Length: 97
Image (tube, rainbow, N blue to C red):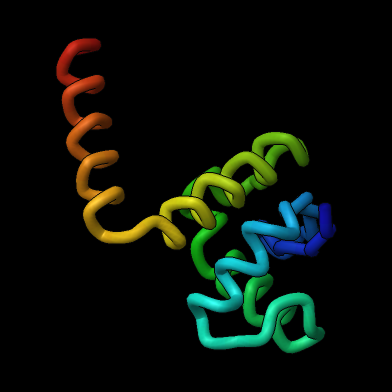
């Protein structure tokens, strides 16, 4: 696990990020994994997306880290897998309604 700092409303939160997911995301974003540049790009990518995923308060590390993991998996998954996942989520939401 790698720890990255993400800001939520001006307060930094440490987010634990899986190294394999980080490497895959770095490659997808066009960078050599596990380099300072790759970590910077992954952190910036998460900074843009994570607050809207988990809310601007950041909350506990566990919630922010889980949100980061979810975002990274969604970004890494190919379009067909992502579409199937979206369909499943819609079906699940409809069953709960």
